Length: 443
Image (cartoon, rainbow, N blue to C red; front, top):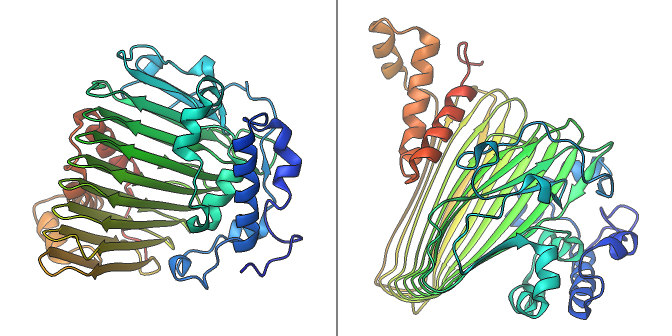
C-alpha cells in the first residue's frame, strides 16, 4: 500500500490538471482506463528501494524535482535529429518532441501495403475499438506503479500494425526528443507494436535531448507477435545529463515467433530499462542484448524478465557495459521456466568493465526453474582492464590511451557483433569509439 501522501506523491492530481488535453477524452473506455490506472498508481506510490525490484535504483529526481506534463509550443525548432537509415529526412521516421507528435518532421511514406504506422492519438480516432482490444488491460491489478501512471497520463506514442505475411524491409526509425522546455517537463509515451502471423519488421528508437532543461520520460511499449512473426527492436538512449528515463517493454510471443532486442545506454542522469517477455507459443524465442557506457555520476538499470511458459522455447541474453568515474549500473535478469515448459533453453550473461575504482555495478542474474528437462545457464563478472593485455599492446608501441580504448572496444565487440543490421552495427561502434576516454584510466 502507498504510504506517500498526496502532498508528496509526484504527479498527484495529474488527471484533473490535464484530462481535457489528453487524447481520447471523448472515449468512455479511455476515460475509464485512465481513472482505474490513476487509482492504482496512488495506491502503489512511486517505487522505492524498499522494493526488491528497485533495491538498487532510487528515483531521486522525482523526490527533488517537480515535473509537469508538457503543454507548451509543440512546434519549436529542432536543429538536429538523429537518424541512421532515415538520415536527412529520407526513409520512414516518426518524431516526437516532449511527447508530442511532429508530423512536419516525420515521414510515413515508403511503407508497403498492409502496414499502419501512426501516432497513438491518430489511432484513437481511426480505430478506437481495435486499440481498446490491444491496450485496455483487464488485468490492471498486475500493473506496476509506473505502468499505471503511464496508462493514466499517456499523451501520445507510436502504433505499428503489420498485416499477415507482410515484410517491412526498410527499418522504421522513431525519435523521441526531450528537454525543449522552460522548466522540468514530463512525458508519458505509450507505444504499441502488433505483428500478425508471418509479419516482419525492424524498429530503431532514438531517445535524445535537444535542450538543457530537466526531463522525465515514463514510456510503456506493448508488443504482440503472431505466429512466425519476427521483430527486431533497437533502442539508442542518449539523453542529456538532466534527463530521467524509465521505460517498460512488454512482449508476448506466439508459436515460432522471434523477438530480438538491442539497447544502447550512454546518456541520462538516471535510466531504467525493463523488458518483460512471455514466450507463450512453442518454438518462440527472444534475444535480449545490451551495451551500457556510463561516466560522471550517471546511473543506468537494465531489468529483464523472461517467462518460458510452454515447451521448446529459447532465450538468450547478453549485457556488457563500461563504467567510468563515479557512475553506477544495475543488471537484474530473471529467467522463469514454468512447470510445463520442458526442453527450454535459457541463457543469460552480464559482464562489466570498471575504468575507475569509484564506479560500481550491482548485478543479480536469476534462474527460477520448475521443469526438469531444460538447459539453462547464467553468469556475471566484473573487473578492470586486463593489465597483461595492456602491457602487451604497449610493448608493441601502442600509446597507453589507445591501448586502453582498443581493449574496451574488444570487450564490447562481442555484444555489438550480434547486431545483424550492418549500418546499425557500424553506427553503434562509432558511438562507442566517440565515448571512450582520450586520457588514462580514472582513479
